[in-house]
Length: 500
Image (cartoon, rainbow, N blue to C red; front, side, top):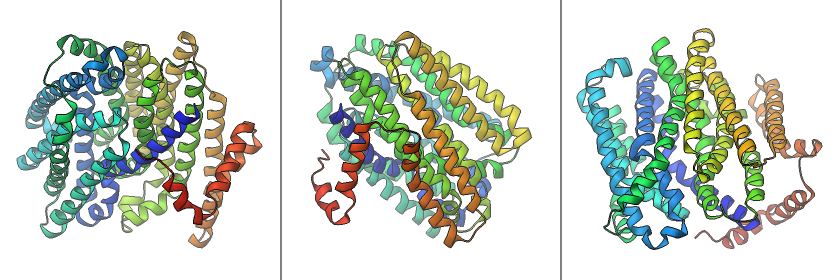
């Protein structure tokens, strides 16, 4: 189990860098946006990004998730290349279909969807950026399934470099706004696609397995509807804010969401990319129960530690990235609420893996639909009263309800036990430390910054007083401290890590 945990940690670290490349360009480019586009236009860009996430969640009817489940099945070991070809062809076909549907809807109902009329050439560039993003999705998914974390991350960095360079060029030197942003994204995706073509030819056999395709789709269609419901749960708040309020408020909320999403991208998603292949490869192992239990606990521990850093320095982060534009940083108090929702969602995703292993995808769908409806109702109830805070609170409550439903089902049906008391204790310590940090928020930076750093460092110590650690865990922590405390040894320690 220790070897598997080390592999998860290593690949999570690598994928974190890759997720910066694919998703965090928006955060890196935030100063450029603050300087060159209005907060209302930033709100419109956020709506377009939500449409992209929505379409990508239904593309392929979940065939990418099914491929993760089937790829390591020993029964299909001799036909993996034709399996990949089957999944890729179906994914591309469905992508074109959903792209046409999106084009039709935005052509005829853009006022209802976006609450504003957008120029045709911007719509066309937006759709092209979505098309090329779809082209590279499945090859990247195959790399993740094969645990090629370093290669996958390198390609994501290539995408990032091209996207940032051309976004800077189009916004600053060509005075282009949304069209420049979408055009830069297209260039980044095309650069990655060119590199991926030889790789994909080595991974496929030109044969479609129709029987397997239908079997995979029977497994995956509830998952795609579940993903769609999850997207509604995650994205409905901004559309409802846009309906009830203004694009300016959508922009302010989206900035808080984007910063809090750093936790999701760097830890939750990266962890998922590293853990899912190992989970399915070990799903028949005798010690899998222990692996599931400790993985959840360590995931919450690491994610919460990182979340504290983002939450405590949220205001300073936004002030730096927005170049002091108050419209861009005034929503920082929303970030801790949103981050707690992200942590709970990450816990729930581990429960879903157990249900996927047992092919209980319809139960996953049922739970997600119920909570998506609850989330929409909470948004309409809380946003008129509490504004953007109501939207953040609605998301957190919905994630807690969804996690609880999944956990109780797994406990009853499969008797998979987790250290829930420990995870709750970790979250309580998060609240204690964050609440303490509020005492310093109005003091000078020379006092607040060192105080916040001390509070973050105190997090693992605080857990000692609650008897959180097992003796073996305390021993491992001491060993890690001895190994890494001297910066002179870092180069030697890193050189011993196998990144392949």
